[in-house]
Length: 201
Image 1: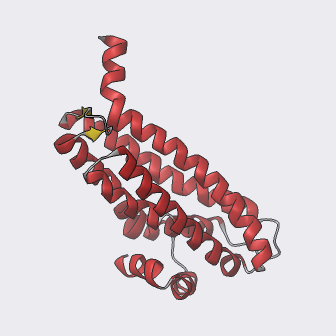
Image 2: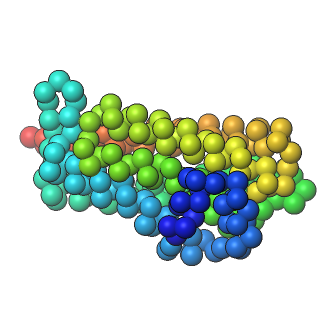
């Protein structure tokens, strides 16, 4: 797992070739990569929201109790796992138009690895400043896009031009998923307690 993480960040072209040759299964991907990497932002946010609290930059800090943060973390974790699967399905849908498309399992595996920078960017949630988390998320998204653009052509055995089209569509869907997750993050980790109190208080 750690070998691929370092490889994707340091020498992605070589790493994509190695990943493609491994013929990995979805079970192995989730057990040795996705489940562990998705825990990075969840654990970081749990520590940040219970020990530091969300800082909105105006002196306002929102801190969650251990139980509230745990519930939010579980939901956020499940959503991230589902998001990887959904992006993989989109790649599979786009790949069907080509002569020798990869299997659905291969597409989900590919999606699991391109999400690596996004998972790593979540570590900044240990000190949950909204602007800092947004900045880290943008950086993670940019590197995810880079991995996607260089990986898709060889992964689907298509030209760079065709790869650009597939990558752009996949990235657009991924951005929508990211925006939904960011919105959920703010609600669950930052304002969830206030919303609940306003409804039932």
